[in-house]
Amino acid sequence: MKKILDESLVYEILSVVEEIPEGNVATYGQIARLIGRDKNSRLVGTVLRRAGLYGEYPCHRVVNHAGRIVPGWTEQRYLLEQEGVSMKNDTHVDLKRFQWDC
DNA sequence: ATGATGACCCGGA
DNA sequence: ATCCGGGCCATCA
Image 1: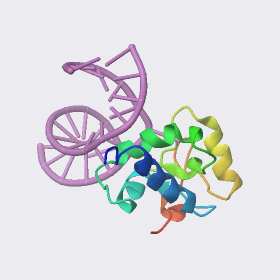
Image 2: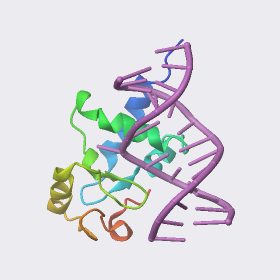
Image 3: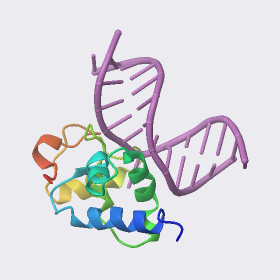
Image 4: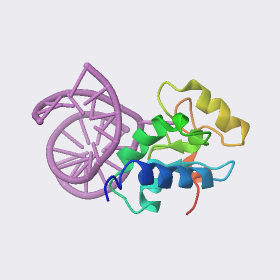
């Protein structure tokens, strides 16, 4: 009875990310809420940053509360536009139209 | 062990 | 719109 954090946390976060429909985006805070940890939005980012070590997940569909895409990850914009998520400008998606309602 | 950092959020000024 | 401070927790140096 130890380590309830790490594995189960990663599992829950990635499960939610996996549910984000194509053509939609979710915010870190939104995901945090969905796993019952509304104050741990920061942790969601930490886990997602290393998500590649656990498998293939659509982590490009996750943006921050303002709709800004990940700084430095230029490929993300391309991936989003390919599935129909249009940008407001170079750094922000149009959250109003494409945020996953859940 | 500690202290800083970060793909964050929210409320207040 | 900006700037600031508090909260949260895994990772990193």
